[in-house]
Image 1 (tube, rainbow, N blue to C red):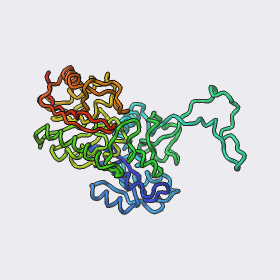
Image 2: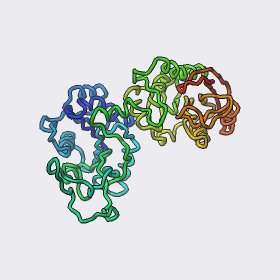
Image 3: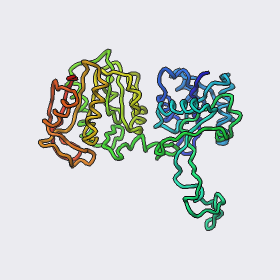
Image 4: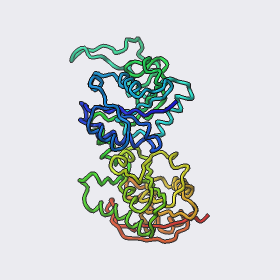
Length: 412
């Protein structure tokens, strides 16, 4: 039994033209390097075929009859199975490129769900925005009729239902003839997926995660070129100053940038280390980072499990800690302590004020620490400060404060 990752990426698209040219690299980057040999792209797009050849990916040049709006995805999958002569018990993981926020953890969880429940096909389900019993089928501009004919007027009497989400779809090769054009049958299993996951169909969907990453957080995105010049200087300077404070390069080192945000800083750090990981809790930020900044020396993830078995020589935390509730800072620093190898270095930055402020003017900050309080916070969580730098800086809230840079090692 073998697991294949099938990415359908035809050329035609009526919503966002040539969207798969933007989305295919994101989907490929969701799959770890060790699994790339099992990726198959089915496409009729010459540009994507060239991309596959450049990245040593298997590609099925899709026949014309399977590259139309009317083509059935079941037939596309079956064509790939026949072309590559899959074994009957091979597992085909279908990854639509329209889900740029998907992670390998989503893929692995779906495979685990298939195995644990001894299924032959499975996919995702999510909470519907409206119950089908409240939906109406249009007759004309004035009249309509119930989409589902039912006698119930109390919502409590409505049956539980869910919406279909092919965030990750898995099917055994031998089962493809038994599913319908929606890739379903009565024995298909369904697992819950995140309702907020973006499914890219139109340009505004793409922009939601690619360009607009400031919802609820303070996020710097260099690729949004309408930003003034000063923020560019301020944000990049933090990484320059942090490297300067570190005072060394790590030719054989593995570093972590936490939280990496849009990924520009992580990419910069790859100039100084063998490998750099960028972690951020925001899937949209990670999708953006993978699209714009991923290179041969860095990897981005929003899944903490990807970090669990690693030890890092250096951890950078640039303007992160003030964006979390004060009570969570101990958890965050202890996590950094655990991920840092013995003798490794933590470089952390944060605004420093005269007196600790639990209600800063910056709406995205939960707190801003005095120097004594921040040093105490680091000491309490097992870090000793080796060097520090305080540099007056004008922040996004318009206030001038000390920008604090701290080079630390484990004290215990």
